[in-house]
Amino acid sequence: MEGVTKKKSLLKKIFSGIGIGGAVIGGGLFSLILVVVRFLYIASAGLSMHGMQLFCFKRGL
Image (cartoon, rainbow, N blue to C red; front, top):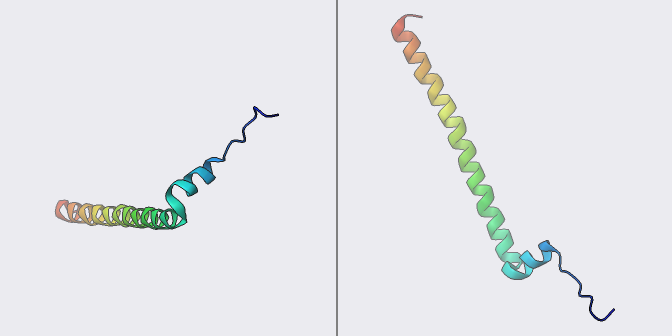
């Protein structure tokens, strides 16, 4: 079995390439981006409801 090489797992390749600290910082940045996107989604839904309220108020509905 001299010609058989062991394959590294993808997770080990990533951690050895960027390091544990890079993975933690990258995960934190990804989490922060998700929080901002979720806030923007909720804010746009709320603002659209206010816009619909003003539209209905002007039309007398």
